[in-house]
Image 1 (cartoon, rainbow, N blue to C red):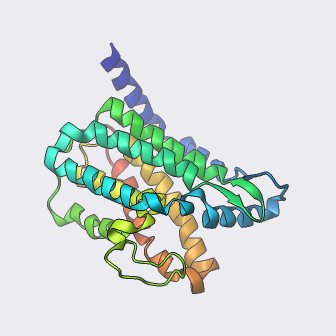
Image 2 (cartoon, rainbow, N blue to C red):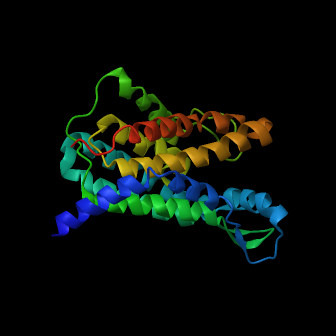
Length: 268
């Protein structure tokens, strides 16, 4: 009975996440104003978001960066060693990751606005986290036969680039220090880890949970749009290289979204 209920809900989620109004709902979410303890007007929303992202809680947790880098390496490596045996644990790990970044990257104690929350990011990241927890229950990801041809493996260099993220966070200048592979903040950032998680799903597509893949990719596309606007249009002098290293988020998310919409049901 439980298995039947899971299959029915998976089918409903597959249908709902293809509806035009589902995409509209996500777009309307972008109108959610940030929350602050200091009163601010609608015209200051952009300033609040910028302040939160630059002063987010995660920026004060550098001691945890190596832990989450190593954890990511271990979890992703285990997929190719233990395969589907660890798929459920991997989904739980990714779900926990998105819940953590929903709070750690969306909340800040800012100098300008006091306690502040980028509500739209928090809501979207939590939605993605819930979908990964759902996959842990549905267990649609089958990690037994990864694609080995260039039609999918082209995402791997993008994932590796995102995982390295060779930038000095203080100056936003290039920094090709190989130690960043283990010490950088990437393990606790949505923008860098999302193309990595999506790359895993792409390599095993179509034997993956297409609903989880679709929502993760869709939120990735939305966040990528904001990054393109911020890095290349608003602050290109300061954030150009940051924008370059957000390209993996853009291209991998768009590709994963397209793939997730090609099949109505999981072929596994």
